Image (cartoon, rainbow, N blue to C red):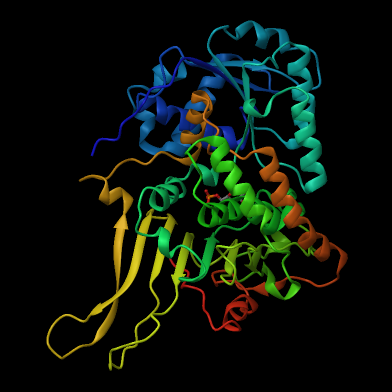
Amino acid sequence: MVSRVIPVEAFDLVIFGATGDLAQRKILPGLFRRFVAGQMPDDARIIGSARTRMEAGEFRDQVRAAIAAHDGPRIDHPQLDAFLQLLDYVPLDAGAPDGWADLRGRLRPDVVRAVYFSVAPSLFATLVQGMSEQGLADADTRIVVEKPFGHDLASARALNEMLSQHFSEAQIYRIDHYLGKETVQNLMAVRFANILLEPLWNAHYVDHVQITVAETVGVAGRGGYYDDAGAMRDMVQNHLMQLLCLIAMEPPVRFDPDAVRDEKLKVLRALAPVAPDDIVRGQYRGAGAIAGYAEDVDNPDSRTESFVALKVRLVNWRWQGTPFYLRTGKRLRARASEIAIVFRMPPHSIFDTPELPRANELVIRLQPDEGMDLKMMIKEPGPGGMRLVPVALDMSFAEALGEDGVDLPDAYERLIMDVIRGNQTLFMRGDEVEAAWAWTDPVVDAWAAGTARPEPYDPGSAGPDAATQLMQRDGRRWRDMRN
Ligand code: BG6
């Protein structure tokens, strides 16, 4: 199957923080891939901006090197030079007056204009102020804001208020890159383009839901940020909450930005406060050559969690009595992200076999190998009478979609193209972000007020034992964590 690429219209994209890690690792290589895919017009323009003084030529060399480092063999791609020609560069110090006039002079009227804030949140206000003074915060400009979107409810509100003084909600694209992942969108297609699952998608038939986002990497290199955030703020408040919303939400009336986001907001508002017994914090220790968390963040007394597991309840009609178990952490056994919908057992087994029926599971894999498994019981093939065996009906999206599979765009590529198209469906609305913080704040505040420390866990494990017990005490178990 040939994937259909719908070209976007001409645009000027300004990237503040263009020499930074995110821009060089994700945004610019991602734009190159969209260019190669034929999605970007030849008159698109990407204007990098950062404090470093350099010419556009030097910036292009930097981007060429970044693409080589992050996009492998594509460095030899015949279209690379043509892509680099779309790039321009304007040095700009957020707080200083120089550079703004130059930037304004390079922007064209009558094309889509988007400004990407790939900078530390502490610079947002100064940059927005600068844009406003230069007449760049007009009604047609779209702005893209990276996480972290605030540190708690109060700071997220302040940020929303500051942005709303200059831009309408329709101009603000708050990125949660999990929403750009192929499987995450597929979740909506599977739920709302099929009749099969909907009758079962509720507390009558779903025993529980497990959401796991496990990483093998540690936090070395970004310890300053991470030690202040921890897994709860870095992953749960945004990525895991967004996944939970898409699983739990009611069918939106249409697939349009506000209809989808209204339904997600209702889920966030239905979250019950988390009981202290329903949450486990962990921190990885060192082992052999692998440094422990405290060493990685250079803070021997750190009480910040690099792992968290929690049982979440939704107080609404559909999910009353079906818990959602969430876990995420660094330095775990596998890089594996998945959502498992674990159904209830059949009410009665008619089979007199040693192998009892097991619960059906729908497993949605986000990474690696995006796809879905449906676990069902069947008869074990061959002679020997009726014996039951669980099998997985496995669908890998890449395999299912073509002989050689399709090249699924990275989350950032897709989201940036959505900004140019003006489609906000996969971006967080201000009230969603605030509702997620309102639920997160009491948890992190209670940790900060107490003296307890996170439970240590071994690198390469599935997290602290207490996380296993969190499910065992309910007579349930986590799925194995593996690639
Ligand atoms: C980021 C977090 O938002 O998501 C990181 O700040 C985390 O700590 C990353 O590693 C995970 O993203 P992905 O796409 O690799 O699962």
